[in-house]
Image 1: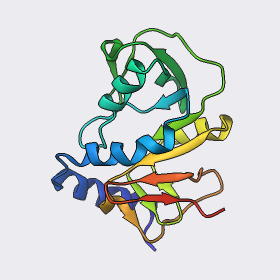
Image 2: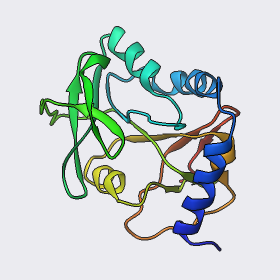
Image 3: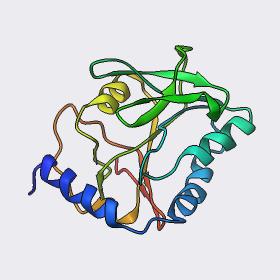
Image 4: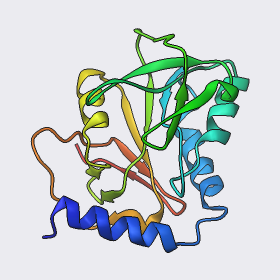
Amino acid sequence: MQTKAEIRKQMRGIRKSAEVAGLSDRILCRLKPLIRDYSSFFVYVSAGKEVGTQQLIGELLQQGKLVTVPKVVGEGIMRPAIISSLDELCVPVFGYKEPAHSNFYGGKIDACIVPGVAFSEDCWRIGNGKGYYDKFLSENPTLKIALAYEFQVLPELPHEAHDVKMDYIVTQMRVICAKK
């Protein structure tokens, strides 16, 4: 089996050259039934060719949902910052926008929308390799939903004790549910 670093390199290359126009909309259509009854969210702010989340964030805000986004506060540490508008996303950290303010949320988060580089059929995830999401998710019990293009889903992935398994992976073609 390939190492995580090898998989990251391979999948980033595929994603960089892939034609993904319109796929985010299809993925979000599959996501919406899963999250319809929830009221508080932690949503990654997409960059580059990641599955787009700005439309989702905007729709959740319009529906009056509580939306938080990642804000890096230290090495390997991010916290959920409450936003009320996409216009608040302005400060780039590691190529991702985050709010300049520190209006953090300490309550229960119903659903966390998670990015990744690669995913497995049994809902493991490989991220960017810094461990921010694994640390956050291990400290915040919540529904974990990853958004991915179908080409990012592999039969299996290496994983370690500190890795956090997703509850669902949503692609443009299907919703994969973790086997308990």
